[in-house]
Amino acid sequence: MKYMLLINAGTIGEDGTAAECTVEDWMSYDKEVKDAGIFVSGESLADLVTVTAVRVEPDGKRTITDGPFAETREVLGGFYVIDVPDLDVALDWAARCPGARGSGSIVVRPIADFGA
Amino acid sequence: MGDEQRAEPGTPIAAAQQAPARASVEAVFREERGRLLASLVRRFGDLDLAEEVTSEAVEAALLHWPTTGVPARPGAWLLTTARRKAVDRLRRDQAYAARLALLHLEAERADPAPPADADGELPDERLQMFFTCAHPALAAEDRVAITLRCLAGLTTPEVARAFLVPPATMAQRIVRAKKKIREARIPFRVPGPDELPERLPGVLQVVYSVFTEGYAASSGPALQRLDLASEAIRLARILRRLLPAEREVAGLLALLLLVHARRAARTGPDGALVLLDEQDRARWDRPMIEEGRDLVVRALRGGPPGPYGVQAAIAALHDEAADLASTDWPQMVALYDVLHALTPSPVVALGRAVAVAMRDGPLAGLALLDGLAGERQLQAYHPYQAARGDLLHRLGRLSEAAAAYRQALALAGTEPERAHLRGKLDAIAPPDPPAGARR
Image (cartoon, rainbow over all chains, first blue to last red; front, side, top):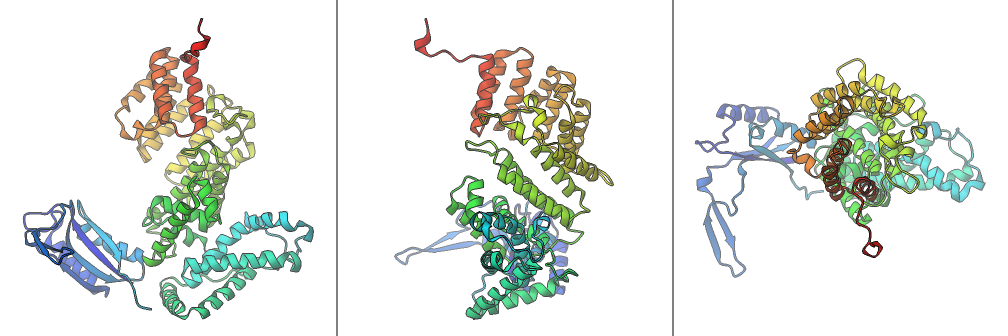
């Protein structure tokens, strides 16, 4: 079963990464996920200043704005998709993720299965 | 409980019992149902399918047993019948079957089935179900609802009635919880020894919530809803059998018994609330108190105390006393100190302040209560203002006492609680007589 771990950073440090953990923390977590054979995909997202939002009106007109539409306290900083047997295992991996510490949080979402 | 109540093998249920007997047979099935459901979930990995065929198997038993007699191994009979029905259902729906087979295979790999008992009866797999139903990934209200549905064997309308919500609302809640269990794949498994300390309190909390909801309904006309309190005790007994070494499980069962033992004295003939100091202690359930006290000893022996064990000890101290004045208040304060160290909260501090007032006098208690005035958790908690009213009353500060009672009255949720507070208020500040009565 596939789960997406959405990594929300509460506060962003000077370098654009979550303030509470180091690059080394992330590198070692990434290695653990890959060594465990559960890694499906994962990316970290570029700094918030690079964000652009697009919306298409009913008349087909595009609206393009700088930054995300709503001011949210939490900022999506990256994600993993992992393939594990059940929610408990997914929650364990989420808890081990450096992004879960301090003001950050990991939102765990099962990937919808339209097969079978 | 169900084990003791189960009919002797081969005993025919008297045909004369028919309709009224059906209700009692159903009651006997309640626990069997939870056991059966857990086994089927284990085998088929799907709660909806398991519920469906459990109901069908129980229906079949109700139909056949009165004439054929109760089979030698009723649990095995039910399981076989239910499995056959499940296989039929899966034959009809191939796509569903393929998906379940895959699910089941993975579950089996992760956690192989326990062997059947020597006598061929069902292995008790309800512990898995307890942990699934109380999973922290479910909303707290959903955990309680689905535990009552799947483990206490209550129907959805019964659960709805117990919580005073419309059946449709409760049905939605249960459907939502089952959908999350299925689609997010919350596993049916007992947490390992390393996870147990983290997960067990959640299971105990669910059972305790069922009890407190039954003991003091948070809203509505009836103060006590005995059914829910009894269901909670039944669930706690099952847990106690499944986890005999866990002292907090003993503590929880002890607490429930020691509080429930006072149920007959807690409401007056007119349904009015009777507080501890005015209760007729002769009406307390002595055998239940004895059972609770034995369990408190087990809960507190052999390791550091847990919060349920300490709360049970507090309840036992009340139950042992002949009246309020002769209660061992120094010991009570000491127990509250332990409880506050384990689970610091303004509500525990409130209990401690009341005990201190009994030990050292109302002024000492009032000082502690006033120290809690800023606690947000107590702002809408009517026992806080009621306790202040009592202490102010004892100090002869009547207008302040009346103000405190009025605040409590505005916050109290049930009519018996409000009636009780109105009584206290009237005792110190009689209401104005109706205009017509004035001279």
